[in-house]
Length: 270
Ligand code: KMH
Ligand code: ZN
Image 1: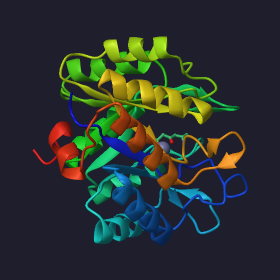
Image 2: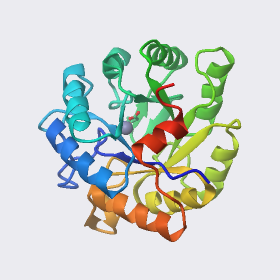
Image 3: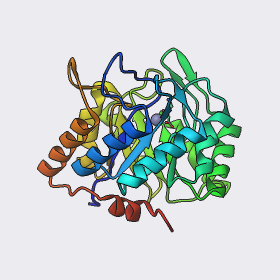
């Protein structure tokens, strides 16, 4: 089995300090958490821009600060969000890609998102994929439901995306695919040979799904974007979630990837 790539989704756009006081907002707070997570075993961080009061933003200046703060202190792969927050325009969401980060998220379909709609119509997906390609940014294909895999593969057929791709299955968003092992097996078996995948389980689904993924040979995403609790009622920190997944990987005999291992596995910089 390949070494395990641990991605930490440090902050997201929705979760706030009212629910968990440990959510990093500013570039410095994100870099501080990134350093600790790297030491604990993370290879990649997925980041969202926030204003100091927590308001989500896709402002390129905010992301430039985040990229330079994390790069100054770690060798982590930094993956910017192009999801942003529900209701943002496509232009807003795309702004961080112009900074040429190593990776960016690319959601390949629309999904109900709690009470809102995370809107990703075909022309937006194509525009995002083309812009990433033009800027040399490797996409992580975010799939909130199984049809999102087919949408990505349709873009491969048209030459807009190229195989092999790295997928992240975001499972358990209210409105998206249910976070069951059966669905995870179905999602992973829906990929063409040579593709890689990770799983992000929402809330209490994070722990069981990431554990199963380690045994299956997939990769994992943990972090406060997806899950703010360590156990019922106990607020997590990002580093606690990384440390736990490393302990589980060790118990299961799966070696953990460094950022450079992850770059090789994901074909970054080629
Ligand atoms: N905040 C969600 C609406 C991504 O980062 O690419 C979308 C999201 C996905 O978080
Ligand atoms: Zn995100």
